[in-house]
Length: 79
Picture: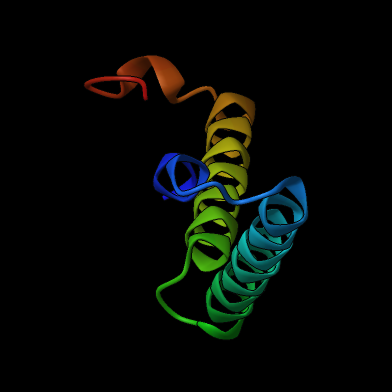
């Protein structure tokens, strides 16, 4: 769009206004996306990350308990 405007003799003031409008639009869009991601308690990336971390902590706890019981070597595989 900018090249089309420049071809029509649009001055630098108009270019500056175009840049300001574009930045406001991008900023608003980024804010809306951030709010949407943060407002999704069940299916958003934050929830996935928290669920993954809890699962990893639980696996480490299980492995530690199995090692203390001496039964780790009798498992068919180690994750």
